[in-house]
Length: 251
Image (cartoon, rainbow, N blue to C red; front, top):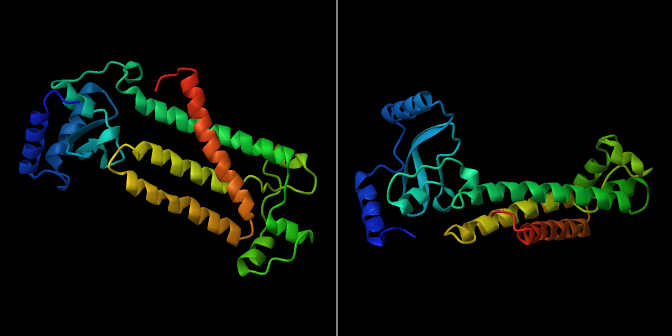
Protein backbone atom coordinates (compact mmCIF):
# COMPACT_ATOMS: atom_id res chain seq x y z
CA UNK A 1 0.00 0.00 0.00
CA UNK A 2 2.71 2.44 0.92
CA UNK A 3 5.20 3.95 -1.51
CA UNK A 4 7.99 2.42 0.54
CA UNK A 5 7.52 -0.06 3.32
CA UNK A 6 10.92 0.89 4.66
CA UNK A 7 9.89 4.53 4.75
CA UNK A 8 6.83 3.62 6.80
CA UNK A 9 9.00 1.70 9.27
CA UNK A 10 11.29 4.72 9.58
CA UNK A 11 8.30 7.06 10.00
CA UNK A 12 6.87 5.00 12.85
CA UNK A 13 10.27 4.87 14.53
CA UNK A 14 10.60 8.67 14.26
CA UNK A 15 7.10 9.11 15.70
CA UNK A 16 8.06 6.97 18.68
CA UNK A 17 11.23 9.01 19.24
CA UNK A 18 9.23 12.24 19.38
CA UNK A 19 7.24 10.80 22.30
CA UNK A 20 4.20 12.81 21.22
CA UNK A 21 1.39 10.27 21.43
CA UNK A 22 -1.04 10.51 24.36
CA UNK A 23 0.49 13.74 25.67
CA UNK A 24 -1.82 16.41 27.14
CA UNK A 25 -3.27 19.20 25.02
CA UNK A 26 -1.07 22.26 24.58
CA UNK A 27 -2.14 25.80 23.78
CA UNK A 28 0.38 26.20 20.97
CA UNK A 29 -1.22 23.34 19.01
CA UNK A 30 -4.76 24.47 19.88
CA UNK A 31 -3.86 27.90 18.50
CA UNK A 32 -2.76 26.33 15.21
CA UNK A 33 -6.10 24.59 14.61
CA UNK A 34 -8.08 27.70 15.58
CA UNK A 35 -6.00 29.75 13.16
CA UNK A 36 -6.46 27.18 10.38
CA UNK A 37 -10.26 27.21 10.83
CA UNK A 38 -10.38 30.98 10.83
CA UNK A 39 -8.06 31.57 7.85
CA UNK A 40 -9.56 28.83 5.67
CA UNK A 41 -13.15 29.39 6.84
CA UNK A 42 -13.70 25.71 7.64
CA UNK A 43 -15.49 24.10 10.62
CA UNK A 44 -12.84 21.46 11.36
CA UNK A 45 -9.07 21.29 11.64
CA UNK A 46 -6.66 19.03 13.49
CA UNK A 47 -3.04 18.32 14.30
CA UNK A 48 -2.70 14.57 14.40
CA UNK A 49 -0.25 11.68 14.34
CA UNK A 50 -0.77 8.22 12.87
CA UNK A 51 0.88 5.21 14.47
CA UNK A 52 0.51 1.57 13.51
CA UNK A 53 -3.18 1.27 14.38
CA UNK A 54 -4.77 4.68 15.02
CA UNK A 55 -4.86 8.38 14.21
CA UNK A 56 -4.46 10.37 17.40
CA UNK A 57 -5.34 14.07 17.65
CA UNK A 58 -2.92 16.30 19.48
CA UNK A 59 -5.28 19.23 18.86
CA UNK A 60 -8.57 19.53 17.04
CA UNK A 61 -11.56 21.77 16.46
CA UNK A 62 -14.92 20.49 15.29
CA UNK A 63 -14.06 16.84 16.03
CA UNK A 64 -15.50 14.94 18.97
CA UNK A 65 -13.06 12.02 19.10
CA UNK A 66 -9.53 12.03 20.48
CA UNK A 67 -8.53 9.19 18.14
CA UNK A 68 -9.94 6.95 15.40
CA UNK A 69 -8.82 3.58 14.02
CA UNK A 70 -6.23 3.94 11.30
CA UNK A 71 -8.40 1.95 8.89
CA UNK A 72 -11.18 4.55 9.12
CA UNK A 73 -9.22 7.74 8.58
CA UNK A 74 -8.75 9.73 5.38
CA UNK A 75 -5.22 10.66 6.37
CA UNK A 76 -3.88 7.16 5.84
CA UNK A 77 -4.19 7.88 2.11
CA UNK A 78 -1.81 10.80 2.52
CA UNK A 79 0.79 8.36 3.84
CA UNK A 80 0.29 6.17 0.79
CA UNK A 81 0.57 9.17 -1.56
CA UNK A 82 4.00 10.11 -0.25
CA UNK A 83 3.23 13.83 -0.46
CA UNK A 84 0.48 16.42 0.00
CA UNK A 85 -3.02 15.05 -0.57
CA UNK A 86 -5.73 17.40 -1.82
CA UNK A 87 -9.29 16.06 -2.19
CA UNK A 88 -11.71 18.46 -3.82
CA UNK A 89 -14.78 16.24 -3.31
CA UNK A 90 -14.56 13.31 -0.90
CA UNK A 91 -17.82 11.80 -2.21
CA UNK A 92 -16.32 11.51 -5.70
CA UNK A 93 -12.98 10.05 -4.58
CA UNK A 94 -12.95 6.26 -4.82
CA UNK A 95 -10.44 6.00 -1.95
CA UNK A 96 -12.64 7.93 0.43
CA UNK A 97 -16.17 6.87 -0.49
CA UNK A 98 -16.18 3.94 1.92
CA UNK A 99 -16.91 6.20 4.90
CA UNK A 100 -19.95 7.60 3.07
CA UNK A 101 -20.92 4.04 2.11
CA UNK A 102 -20.99 2.87 5.72
CA UNK A 103 -23.05 5.89 6.81
CA UNK A 104 -25.59 5.34 4.03
CA UNK A 105 -25.71 1.57 4.62
CA UNK A 106 -26.34 2.03 8.35
CA UNK A 107 -29.16 4.51 7.65
CA UNK A 108 -30.72 2.16 5.09
CA UNK A 109 -30.60 -0.85 7.42
CA UNK A 110 -32.10 1.06 10.36
CA UNK A 111 -34.97 2.38 8.25
CA UNK A 112 -35.61 -1.00 6.65
CA UNK A 113 -35.66 -2.78 10.01
CA UNK A 114 -38.08 -0.18 11.40
CA UNK A 115 -40.53 -0.52 8.51
CA UNK A 116 -40.33 -4.32 8.47
CA UNK A 117 -41.03 -4.36 12.21
CA UNK A 118 -44.01 -2.04 11.79
CA UNK A 119 -45.39 -4.17 8.95
CA UNK A 120 -45.04 -7.33 11.05
CA UNK A 121 -46.93 -5.70 13.91
CA UNK A 122 -49.71 -4.62 11.56
CA UNK A 123 -50.07 -8.16 10.19
CA UNK A 124 -49.46 -10.09 13.40
CA UNK A 125 -50.27 -7.97 16.47
CA UNK A 126 -49.08 -10.23 19.29
CA UNK A 127 -49.40 -9.03 22.88
CA UNK A 128 -46.31 -8.78 25.09
CA UNK A 129 -46.20 -10.91 28.28
CA UNK A 130 -47.28 -8.19 30.70
CA UNK A 131 -50.32 -7.31 28.54
CA UNK A 132 -51.23 -10.97 28.06
CA UNK A 133 -51.12 -11.41 31.86
CA UNK A 134 -53.41 -8.40 32.35
CA UNK A 135 -55.94 -9.92 29.95
CA UNK A 136 -55.77 -13.34 31.62
CA UNK A 137 -54.29 -14.99 28.53
CA UNK A 138 -51.32 -16.33 30.53
CA UNK A 139 -50.61 -16.82 34.23
CA UNK A 140 -49.96 -13.63 36.18
CA UNK A 141 -46.37 -12.48 36.09
CA UNK A 142 -44.69 -13.53 39.33
CA UNK A 143 -41.32 -11.78 39.19
CA UNK A 144 -41.04 -8.35 40.83
CA UNK A 145 -39.98 -6.90 37.51
CA UNK A 146 -42.98 -8.49 35.81
CA UNK A 147 -45.45 -7.13 38.35
CA UNK A 148 -43.89 -3.70 38.09
CA UNK A 149 -44.06 -3.88 34.30
CA UNK A 150 -47.70 -4.97 34.35
CA UNK A 151 -48.61 -1.95 36.47
CA UNK A 152 -46.56 0.49 34.40
CA UNK A 153 -48.63 3.12 32.55
CA UNK A 154 -47.04 2.58 29.13
CA UNK A 155 -48.29 4.84 26.31
CA UNK A 156 -51.27 3.59 24.30
CA UNK A 157 -51.44 6.36 21.71
CA UNK A 158 -47.89 6.55 20.41
CA UNK A 159 -49.04 6.78 16.80
CA UNK A 160 -51.80 5.95 14.32
CA UNK A 161 -50.45 2.44 13.66
CA UNK A 162 -51.22 1.42 17.25
CA UNK A 163 -54.92 2.07 16.69
CA UNK A 164 -55.18 -0.40 13.81
CA UNK A 165 -55.50 -3.32 16.21
CA UNK A 166 -58.24 -2.97 18.80
CA UNK A 167 -57.31 -4.26 22.24
CA UNK A 168 -53.56 -4.67 21.64
CA UNK A 169 -51.84 -1.28 21.46
CA UNK A 170 -48.37 -2.73 22.15
CA UNK A 171 -46.08 -4.55 19.74
CA UNK A 172 -44.35 -7.76 20.82
CA UNK A 173 -43.18 -9.40 17.60
CA UNK A 174 -40.55 -8.71 16.49
CA UNK A 175 -38.55 -7.31 19.39
CA UNK A 176 -36.88 -4.21 18.02
CA UNK A 177 -35.00 -3.96 21.31
CA UNK A 178 -33.18 -7.06 20.15
CA UNK A 179 -33.27 -6.09 16.48
CA UNK A 180 -31.62 -2.69 16.87
CA UNK A 181 -28.99 -3.91 19.34
CA UNK A 182 -28.08 -6.92 17.17
CA UNK A 183 -27.93 -4.65 14.12
CA UNK A 184 -25.51 -2.28 15.87
CA UNK A 185 -23.35 -5.21 16.98
CA UNK A 186 -23.23 -6.75 13.49
CA UNK A 187 -22.48 -3.42 11.89
CA UNK A 188 -19.58 -2.71 14.25
CA UNK A 189 -18.30 -6.23 13.68
CA UNK A 190 -18.24 -5.73 9.91
CA UNK A 191 -16.36 -2.46 10.36
CA UNK A 192 -13.71 -4.05 12.56
CA UNK A 193 -13.48 -7.49 10.95
CA UNK A 194 -10.40 -6.73 8.85
CA UNK A 195 -8.63 -4.80 11.59
CA UNK A 196 -6.75 -5.68 14.74
CA UNK A 197 -9.84 -4.65 16.72
CA UNK A 198 -11.82 -7.67 15.49
CA UNK A 199 -11.77 -9.56 18.79
CA UNK A 200 -12.50 -6.43 20.81
CA UNK A 201 -15.52 -5.72 18.60
CA UNK A 202 -16.83 -9.22 19.30
CA UNK A 203 -17.24 -8.19 22.93
CA UNK A 204 -20.01 -5.94 21.64
CA UNK A 205 -22.27 -9.00 21.75
CA UNK A 206 -22.77 -8.06 25.41
CA UNK A 207 -24.97 -5.17 24.28
CA UNK A 208 -27.75 -7.26 22.64
CA UNK A 209 -27.45 -9.86 25.41
CA UNK A 210 -27.98 -7.18 28.08
CA UNK A 211 -30.91 -5.70 26.13
CA UNK A 212 -32.49 -9.12 25.75
CA UNK A 213 -32.17 -9.95 29.43
CA UNK A 214 -33.72 -6.62 30.41
CA UNK A 215 -36.81 -6.87 28.21
CA UNK A 216 -37.50 -10.49 29.17
CA UNK A 217 -36.99 -9.82 32.88
CA UNK A 218 -39.38 -6.86 32.80
CA UNK A 219 -42.07 -8.82 30.95
CA UNK A 220 -41.92 -6.83 27.73
CA UNK A 221 -40.97 -9.71 25.43
CA UNK A 222 -40.87 -13.47 25.13
CA UNK A 223 -37.58 -15.10 24.15
CA UNK A 224 -39.04 -15.96 20.75
CA UNK A 225 -39.68 -12.25 20.13
CA UNK A 226 -35.97 -11.59 20.66
CA UNK A 227 -34.93 -14.39 18.33
CA UNK A 228 -37.23 -13.08 15.61
CA UNK A 229 -35.89 -9.55 16.10
CA UNK A 230 -32.29 -10.80 15.82
CA UNK A 231 -33.10 -12.75 12.65
CA UNK A 232 -34.78 -9.66 11.19
CA UNK A 233 -31.67 -7.56 11.95
CA UNK A 234 -29.28 -10.04 10.32
CA UNK A 235 -31.56 -10.50 7.29
CA UNK A 236 -31.99 -6.76 6.80
CA UNK A 237 -28.26 -6.05 7.12
CA UNK A 238 -27.16 -8.66 4.62
CA UNK A 239 -30.18 -7.99 2.40
CA UNK A 240 -29.40 -4.28 2.11
CA UNK A 241 -25.74 -4.99 1.38
CA UNK A 242 -26.65 -7.60 -1.23
CA UNK A 243 -29.02 -5.18 -2.94
CA UNK A 244 -26.42 -2.42 -2.71
CA UNK A 245 -23.90 -4.51 -4.61
CA UNK A 246 -26.54 -5.86 -6.97
CA UNK A 247 -27.36 -2.31 -8.01
CA UNK A 248 -23.62 -1.56 -8.22
CA UNK A 249 -23.91 1.44 -5.91
CA UNK A 250 -20.61 3.00 -4.80
CA UNK A 251 -18.85 1.41 -1.83
